[in-house]
Image (spheres, rainbow, N blue to C red):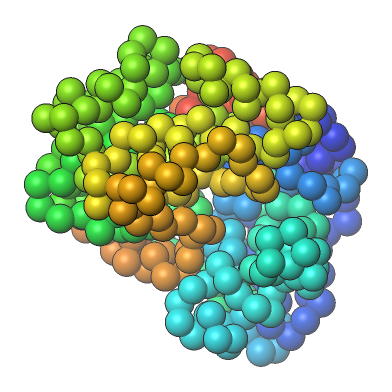
Length: 389
C-alpha cells in the first residue's frame, strides 16, 4: 500500500509499505477514505518531536471503511464507516473510566520513554513518534486500529467524509479548548492562532456562549476565515497584542485566553527572537511567545487554555504574573472519544459544517508537496485533506 513516511526534517516520502494485519483480538483494519495533515504533524516535519525513526508512517486524522475486525470487536462490522480518534484508548483503565482518554494507562507500549520525559506515559497516538507508542499513522491507504471496540465512531451514511473527518482531532481539540475556558454569558475569549484548531476554537467558543471572540494571527487567509466565523481579528505583526487586547476589553483583559499555537510560535518581539535562537541551538525545546502573551493579557482570575502542543522545556515563563493574577491553566492532549458523538450530533443538527476549514483536496502522492505548502502557508493553505484510495 501507499503511505506517507517520515525520513527526517523536511523529508517525507510516499512509499510502498506492507498492508496492516490484525495483531490483537481487539484490532480492526480500516481502508482509509480521507486523511488530513495536522498542524501537529508539522512539529514532526520540522524535527521537534524526538524518537522518530526513518520510515515511520505519519498521520493521526483519518476515517474510512472497516475491512476486518478481531474476534473481540463486537461493535463494528465489515463495511461500517468510522472516524478514528487520534488517541488510542483501552477503555478499561482508571483514566479511561473517568473519560480522561488521552491519559490511558495501557495503550502506549513505550510509556516508559514518555514517563522519563514527562513523568507520565499517556495514551498511544497514531503516527506521532515512538514516544507515543510508535503506531503507524493514517496517512496511508490502510491502517490497523488497536482497541477498535472503544475508539472508532460509526458515521451515518448521510454524513460525507468532509463533515466527519475532523471529529478525529481538530474539532474536539478546538471544542475542548473552549470548554476548558468555563465560558460564562458575556465572556470575551482571545485565541492565539487561526490555524485549523484555532478556527474550531472560535466557533466552539460561540457555541458555548461567548459574547465576543478575538482571534490573533498574521496570515491573511486565516484571519479572513476567522472573521467568517464572527471573530474580531488582530494581526500580531501590526499591533502590540497585549495592549490592544486591553483596549478592546475596557482595560481588563479577556476572560480567557486560548493558546492554539504551541511550540513553534512566531513573533517579532525580543522574547520571540530569544526563543528562536535558543531553540536553534537546542537550549530550549519550545517557543512560548504566544503563551507568554496569554498570561500577560488574561484578566485576573481568568483562564489560560492550551490546546497547542508543547514538547519539553520553556524559558522565561512569567509564572509570577500568572500567580499574581490567580490564573487557572487547563491543557493537555484532547480526550477525543468524549467529544466525538456530541459533536457529530451538532453536525447532524446543522449547527456547524466542519468542512469550512478545507482549502486543499489532493491525492496521497501529493503529500510531500503539501507538507511544504502547509508549512509555508503558500497558496492560501489552511487545511489539507488527502484521498489515499
